[in-house]
Length: 245
Image (cartoon, rainbow, N blue to C red; front, side):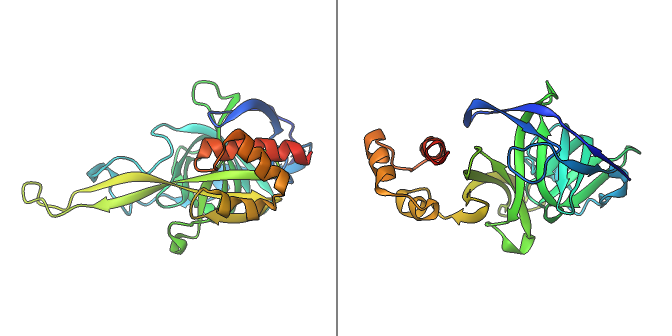
C-alpha cells in the first residue's frame, strides 16, 4: 500500500450552488479541504462480489442515482481513498456498486464511507454530486444512507433521495404483484458537523438547530424567506455561513 499526497483541485457544480467551489479530494479532514496525505488503495481489495438478491429487470424504475456508470472517489471511514472508474449508488440498498480492476461488479455498504464524490459523465474533471453517509432517516434498519451535500460552509443542507420499492395489487394478466421504484426526498442539516434529520422544512425546525439570533430572523423577514423549500433554505444558509466567516 502506497502512501502519497494527492492534490486534485476540481470544481463543484450543482443546481443548488450558484458559486464555484474548489476542493482538494485528497483531504478527509474538512468539507472543502486543504492538502493532506492519504492512502490510495486498490479497489480490488474492497467489497464483495455482487449477488442479485432482487431482479431489478422485473421492477419498473431504478434504485440508482444514475442509470450510467460514473468515475468516482470513495473516502473510507478508515482514512483510505479509493479511485474508481465506474461506480453507481444504490439508493435502495445503501450500497456502492462498482467495477473492480478485473471488471467484476462489486458492492460495498454505505457505513464504510465518509464521503463519495461522483464525477460528471461528460466531463470527468468536474463534480456531479457529493454524498456523505449518515443514518438512514427513512429506514433505520438499513444502517447508513447516502445524503447529497447541497452547499458548503459551517451549516450544510443534505438531501436523501431515497429509492423506495412499491408493490401493487396482484395483476392476473401478469401473474404477479407489479413492483416499481419511486424516489422520495428527505432533508437533514449539519451544524459544525452535528447531524440533524429534518422532519419538515420550516423556521421552527431549522432556526434552533443553527442557533440563530434576532438579526437572522430580521434577514428572513426582510427577504420574505419562510424556509419552506430547498431554495429558501439554501439562500438562508448562504447568508448565515457568510455572516459567520
